Amino acid sequence: GESVGLHLPTLSVQEGDNSIINCAYSNSASDYFIWYKQESGKGPQFIIDIRSNMDKRQGQRVTVLLNKTVKHLSLQIAATQPGDSAVYFCAENMRNKIIFGKGTRLHILP
Amino acid sequence: DAGVIQSPRHEVTEMGQEVTLRCKPISGHNSLFWYRQTMMRGLELLIYFNNNVPIDDSGMPEDRFSAKMPNASFSTLKIQPSEPRDSAVYFCASWTSYNTGELFFGEGSRLTVL
Image 1 (tube, rainbow over the protein chains, first blue to last red):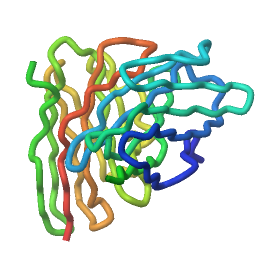
Image 2 (cartoon, each protein chain N blue to C red):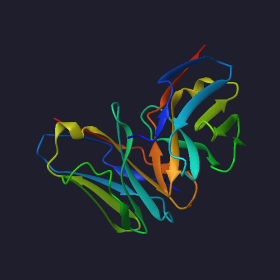
Image 3 (cartoon, rainbow over the protein chains, first blue to last red):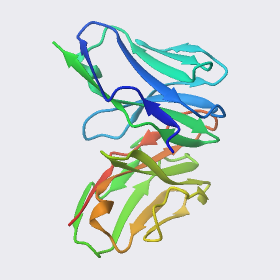
């Protein structure tokens, strides 16, 4: 079965608010957990990753949190903008094999 | 750098025909991945290569699918014979760093089998 999955297929957020996209995983042996963004008609694009021995990592307007106790991963996007509208995938790196979850579509409301 | 280049971008074919999808990874990247994306099954890893050698092909659906990487700058994914259920977007991705997650994807090849 699928090791990485997402809680919600669609998330709607008001422009300017913070977005939180969640993901649950089942494989504790993964080395890295990763978030990708996919815009319509394009390939997925790397956003940020986190090593399995960390619990938080920040990038530009994004923060990834890893809770190994409950096997939960989240992506926080600060001050959501129209350009953030896309499908977001969590993925895991299992010995250099990247496995993707099914994705959450983020809608930005004006 | 031109990024990962895939061709064709779109292909429409009839059931039973052979389909060949092509990929040129980013120069210097030593690993290449083929994924298939559908609404029902999401992004599925089909096969990946490291230094031109297939490492894991457990995601290849059946014997109708085959992939090759004759050199570091070229890979093909072949479906013979094609079936309507093979309709999907096929992505190629490459990377150079181990123990990380930054895959670089191509724009994909959208295949429609009638």
